[in-house]
Length: 330
Length: 188
Image 1: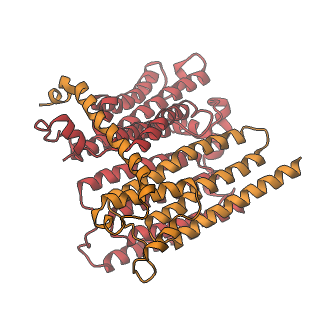
Image 2: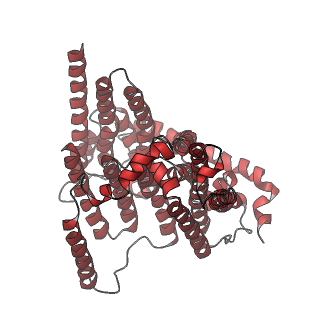
Image 3: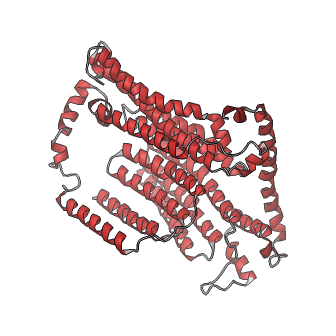
């Protein structure tokens, strides 16, 4: 009951924020509101017991993507231009699509209905067999990393390809800075180094953020967490440092070649686990053959591929941020 | 003992809720940005701290109070910083500091003073400090604001100068460090 009340409250807030995003002309306001939107969404996910998704949404939606949007805005204008078409076409399109979605939700099972299709299909099998086959307390991790290892591999490659796409759009161009002295260059970069209080407090938080990221990485077998969340958290720590100290110092901390290397290395590690398990007589991404004991093999496989996922996600986030921050210098 | 704890936590929670309410009310009612921020910071500090304390008492001797204490520590550090960053950004981007009434006319000077120096909490001092130093930097308002609060401003000006001095030192050090020409030689 209380869940429903909270969810209704949060969903109402979401609608209000969404209307706010639509109605504002100032793109900075829209970016901030979309950060708030993600934070409310994360709270909503948490209420629905999806702690993994909530973590990701909070870190990426409210944190990193807000920073990336601001980085994009630094390259473009602050105000929205009026759209090329009138307001009627978008209104009709979105009403039609919204109508379809609302019509679809009429068929959806009620919240928490035990007879819903998703709870009858493969979920009981996963819940039944996880203790015996994989033996990790967090079934989500078991499903994500082992039973559905192909899907996760696909996701990692989606992130990998997205990074390549962003890099080919933004490029690795270096701004014309050979003529500028280093001091002058520092002055032109947007950073918070001149603001003592945010810098001191922010830098104090960075190690804890990274530590928490590592905890989430290695605790994924036992509780909410795993490579995606951990990667985003660690990248958030690095990005916070770069924001406080300026892009050049951020690039000194994590050089671009290193973050790009992480992107490739993570995906490579994941694939290697699959290939090695094939070489050892199993199927692709069948971790049971990695050790004498199938369950132990599963543990090992999950640990390694989660590390791969974490590396790729960290690398992608940092690489994209660096690409933006270096373009922002004019 | 349980009853006492319950009563204490109820009092703390109610007081915290009151702070949050007053904060929200203030954001709605205050005349301009910096006074609104002051109201909002009540929610961050007083409200959050009291509510967390109240919840800690409910937690008993488990891990819960320690987790709440960690959250409290986090908020204790970050929310004043966020308030500072917000006020500073507003100041730099030239948000108007002049109080206006509902019709949009500026308030008389003495009313402005009594409006923002009510309770002598930390955030008030901070807010008014940033306001006054903002008036110093935006020259057009400096003229109309000359005499009355000069003594209070001295301190805030000093505080404002400090980071600037520090920042001036930093790039020099860094320039020396990076003089090896690493970034220039990497890509050609």
